[in-house]
Image 1 (cartoon, rainbow, N blue to C red):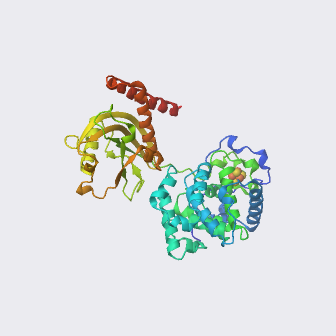
Image 2: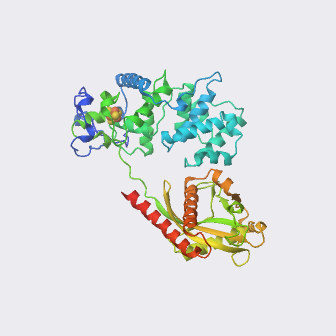
Image 3: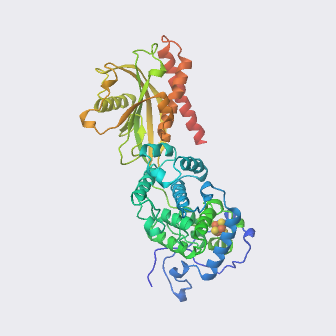
Amino acid sequence: MSKTPITRTLRNGTNSSTKPSEITPTKRKRAAKPKISSKNKGESGGIEDIEDLLKFNEEEIAEIRGSLLEWYDKNKRDLPWRRLKDDDDGGERKAYGVWVSEVMLQQTRVATVIDYFNRWMLKWPSLYHLSLASLEEVNEMWAGLGYYRRARYLLEGAKKVIEEGGSFPRTVSSLRKVPGIGDYTSGAIASIAFNEAVPVVDGNVVRVLARLKAIYANPKDSVTVKKFWSLAGQLVDPYRPGEFNQALMELGATLCTPTSPSCSECPVSVQCQALTLSRQGGLVTDYPLKVVKAKQRNEFSAVCFLEISESQNLVEDTQKTRRYLLVKRPNEGLLAGLWEFPSVLLGQESEITIRRKEIDKFLKASFNLDAKKTFKVISREEVGEYVHIFSHIRLKMYVEYLIIHLKGGSKLLQSAPDEGSMIWKCADSKELSSMGLTSGVKKVYTMVQQFKENSLTAAPTQDTKQTKSKNSLTAATQDTKQTRQRKKR
Ligand code: SF4
């Protein structure tokens, strides 16, 4: 028989009828890490075949299905996507709602998703309505949820389904052909909306299964992932597949949590091998194996909040006439197709003179904006620093606030030939404050607004402007430092 690289702790014959309430697994004295073996030593070695261990027997399957569904019926959270009914449209609106909610829930907490989901369904109540939306509108609605590629795929998927006749695919195999719908989302839609008896496996399901079967293996490893799909497939209830899948995920989200599982309340504690093993001194939280995350790389950027004033000095200028330059990021890569303030990636931490030089070069190359020829600098000040964390990048942004007056009027603001593909716009303050901006761009905007308020309080007259501006800059920097210190605590 073939050997699987899955490793797990082996059964030790502990009496599994001990009541779970007698156990406080996370508080017990920690024993040695579970032994791991991927080898089948055969009957004489007292170790069972690893393939057999990765199966539930019929009794376990029946008990887990029954207990979990009963618990779910009584305890499920009331969430807006769970209120969608099987209407007389054959479940299509429900399928659409499940799709939207499942995509939003990837990488985002339920509490955050609820409001986004409600607003989304109000604006685009059906797949057809969504298919008519622009990427711009979808990105605006998504602003703040992060991982914007998810929103783009939702839109592309909706357009594709409508183009191909508009009927929602109803099975895992047909759903997998829709752009952006993978194994997990297709399983969720097919089981929840169309009752197909197929499993789903997300992080919560992996954790529950790893503990039920005491699997101590890397849950990101592709072979291990396949085993989790196989285990979930054995358990899924053929009569209530959608509810069973949601119950398994709900258990992982609410009771079988990563660090503080509530085993005494768990409906499947009798079947849980990690709990059984914990009575020997281990911890249920040893399962699954914790994978060390890849280190984020550090990046640095100079961000320029550029205001264009119609007047040549701040006394004559009114905020109403000012406009703000925004550029669209390329359609591929990080934050693809989203608006941001002009910025330049720096190779490393850089001093102010280098940062300004890089921004000047960018403005000249992209917009023919040249301080010597095409505009006059009214004010240029440092606002502060902000670190934005992406999943794999730690981006430190140095934010400056530049106010300019165009010498030849706004027609000078045009793309240079070699940067013709860059898309940009000048927004007034009303448009800017109503735009759906990413959380990083919003943070920069808020920093600048705070800086302006501080400057206004500190520097009411032109004469004292320079001194007061320095004060406000110091204040902003101190704010940033204090915030950092608070975070450290
Ligand atoms: S499945 Fe999770 S919550 Fe339930 S007994 Fe096992 S470790 Fe505890």
